[in-house]
Each structure stands twice: as structure tokens, then as C-alpha cells.
Amino acid sequence: MILPQITHLVSICAKSGISQAILSPGSRCAPLTLAFIRHPTIHCRTISDERSAAFMALGMAQQLNKPVVLVCTSGSAALNYGPAIAEAFYQQVPLLVLTADRPAEWIDQWDGQTIRQQNVYGPHVKGSFSFPDDASLPDKLWHAKRIVKEALVLAKTFPYGPVHINVPLREPFYPLPQETYHFDITAMEPVLEVEAGSKHIREEVWQKLKNQLSGFRKILLLPGQQPPHPKIKRLLSAIIQKQGGVLVTDVTSNMAQPQAIIHHDFFGLNPERHQDMVPDLLISFGKSILSKSLKQFLRNCPLSHWHILPEGPVPDPFQHLNQIIRLQPDTFLEFLLQEGPVIDPSFKQSWESKNEYVKEQLPELLQEASFGELKALSGLLSSLPATGKVHLANSMAVRNANFLGISQEKVEVISNRGTSGIDGSNSTAVGCTFTTKEPVTLITGDLAFFYDRNAFWHQYNMANLRIILFNNHGGGIFRMIEGPANLPELEEYFETQQRLNASSLAAEMDFEYNLVKSMPELKKVLTNFFHDSIKPKIIEIESSSETNTRILKAIQQKFNATFAKE
Image (cartoon, rainbow, N blue to C red; front, top):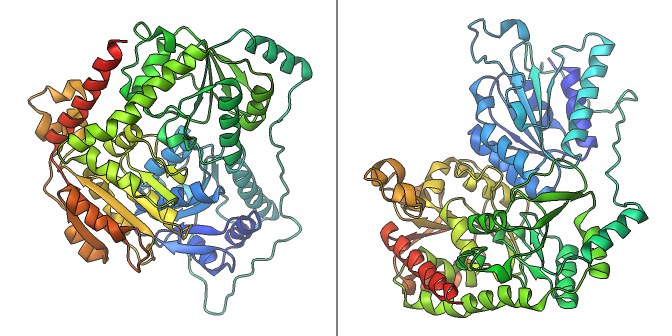
């Protein structure tokens, strides 16, 4: 039986611009699945593991900047979407999550595959809706259409995010042989438009900001995680040139440029020891930053903090937020370029001199070091294609990349820093490959990689995927953290030591595979690693967790000792 409320749901999705759906197999969700499959303008893929499916949808929506649909059956299947939905919520990525369900009277009655699915994602969705379970009355059908439209508008209203519709379905689920789908949009389709937040503020507010800015001479610009934005990048460059601004960037900000401060994790920042580097005004935009040392430094500085955001809640990660400016960042930066003060040259010099010193010394220190993750990553980053996408898994992969920086300015850096979990790194990168023909490079550690191996369990082409797997056979990051590093239980209960390598997985999934244990081997493999191929490729770099820890700590101590003498 073809259900009219489901046909209209899919029709409204298509008319609203949705073109991609990730479906997971199941019986209860059959009416949803078949309607999406049979719609002529929606491209569907089927992914058996719901956790991987949801992260793939996340990876797609990051690139498409519009909702991707997720469909699963009832019961625990819906719970497996949870990690990716939380990540999408904090990254502000739009998803439309459709969970099939039993009718309400069968919940808690020991019927198969039933759980309490209404509001199952709690505060980690922008909204949760309950779909009508029949369309026998005109008002019921109107209500179904209205829910779909409202959910899509909510997902695409700034800040973007995931929205959930729970869809109770009654048997029979499957269309009869003589039935056909009709996706015509009727005149009753709801129209719902939401105006974007204002991009303009009153003249007196501009004058107030101008007067306030005149009292600052040590302004630090700090973009958080965000996708590339060429106009913002150009404005930041112009501010640096005209006013001597100080721009500090994490690798996930996609705002790095030649004059940006990128090596701040090696400065050993301390407000008392580095008073010449303490800003009097911090101007931030975008989402979170990665660097723990920078966050701690700014929390301990006496400063004013302005955050630029057109709409939505504004966190206070540095505990100094005293002004929220409701503008698009590029609009404010244009104002700052015209009206901002000239920066104290000694403040600018303090930041730039340290950054230049690290930039000059770091290659020599790595050259002298034993083979390990940091040395291998340095060689890899310099070999990346000039364009493409780089996905950084959480734990040491993203931190090591932040230590070193990525010099290719046209490469987009992506990382699941919303919740900072390791669980969906592979799947997010795979989802990205579904949206682009450019190279997609995943840089990951062994625990994140093996935890999400079902990312590759499907039939779809990923020939542009390149995986750099750092395998130290455990969670090496815990040797970097002072607490667990000194515990006798470190190896068994924190590092989670494992003996796996990727050779068997590569054979099963038909990936090109190379195992590397030295720099000469790595250089040889890199000569054609990024060349086009008909298969995905993996380089597995095997190293010792103890060696990696020793090298990084030695480099940090050297720079800390040097800067402590200043």
C-alpha cells in the first residue's frame, strides 16, 4: 500500500532542494525507503550500519551545505544515529533524520523492535516532530505536509543543524504490483519562509563600535572552525597588511595564510611570562578552536572579548565574552578594515617572532628525530595535493596536524570537532567522497580507524579516497596526558593496546595498501600515492607510541626553554 503522507513527505523534500538520501535496510521503514528510491530527482544510497550511515550523511551535508536525509527502521537502529546527530548539532550541519516506528499503542507492549522513539535525540536536535500515522482525514494530511516543511525550514535556519521526524507506520508496508507512485505537489503544500537575520546595524551602533575600537592597541583575531571562506580570508590578509593585525589560526579554521600565527602550540604561552603577547581585545568568529594551550592562555589574560555571529547562542570558552555583534563576519571585518586602529607593533612582533622561530627550527628538529608520527606527518603534509579535502580524525591526528600546520591554502580541512569523538572519522570522509571528485585524504590513528571500519562496508565507489593510517597499536594520546601517563594501568586500560593492522581490511575491501616503517619507505610510496586510480589507497605507518611521545615532548621542551629565556 502506498501511503499518501509518505509520498508528500518525499515530494516536499525534493521541492525544497534535497537531492541525497542515505537509507539503512529494514522492514518497518519500507514505505519511506521505497518512496525515496522511486523519486526521480533524489539520489539514494543504502548503508547497512546505521552509525556509519549517519556519519556519511554528515560528511555529505558538510560539503553540500544543505540537508541530507537519513532513513532507518524502528528500534535500536535509531539509537545508532546518535553520535553523528550530536556531532551535526555542534558542528551546525543540517540533517533530516527520519526514523520509522511502531504505532503509539504498541510502544512498551513487548512488540518487536520497539523503543521510546519520540524525542529520542533529546537536546541534540534543533527540533523533534511526530508524524501522523494515517492520512484518512484531510487535516491529517495537511498536518503531515506542514511538519515536513517546518522541519526542513528549521534544519536550514541559521545556525543549521539536525532535525528529527519520527514516523509511525502501520502494515501493510509494501505497494501492490499495480500501484505506482505519484509525486505531484498539490496546491495544499504549505509555504513557509523565514527571513535571515539582519546583516546591518544602526549607524549609532557603528559609531559606538568605532569609539570602543579606538581604545584598543593589542587586538588578536581568532577564527574558529569553519569551512573555507575566500572573502573572509582576503579581508583578514588586508587587515594584517594595513593595521598590523595579529591573526592566530588553528588548522581547522581554514584561514591559515603566510602571515598567520600557526605554531602557537609550541610557544609555552603564559600571561605572566609573556605579558607582551597579552591582547587587550580578542575578536573571534566561527566555532571552537582546537588548541588547549591557547584556550588556557586566553582564559588567564585580562582582556575584552567580542564574538561575531549573526544569530544563535554564543558560548564563552575564554570566560571573557562581553560583546556579541550580530553581523556576518565579513561585514564586521570590512568595518574593522576601514575603522580599526593600528596595532601596537611590539605586540605584533612578539607573536610573529616566535612563530618564525618555530617555523625555521621545526624542520631541523624533525630531521634529527627518530622515525615517528610527527616526522612522517611532516613529510605527508608537504606532499598533499594543491587542492582537495583533508579529514583529520580526533586524538593525535588532528593535534599533530595543528602542531605542524598545512601550507596548501586551497585544501579544505575538516574534522569532527563538534563532540571530538573518534567514532565516525572514516564514515565522514567516505560521505565526503560521495560529493566530490577532488582527492579526499583521511589522516587517522589506529583506534579511530578500526573502530569505524564499517565505513567501507558498501558497494559505492571511493576511488578518490586516500587514507593515512598512523598505527602505534594503542591510544597514544594518553601518553601525552600527565594523569594517565603516570598510571600503572596505562597500557591495558587507557591505551587499549591492539595488534591489528590494515592489510586484511584492505584485501577485503579491495584497497591499494602499503605498510611503511621508515622515511625512505614513506618517500617511495608517496611518489604516486595521490595519483588517480580506480581504487582507494591506504598507507599504514607503523610506529612506537613511546617514541612518538618522546619526540613530541623533546620538541616542546626545547621551544619552551628557548621562549622562557626571553
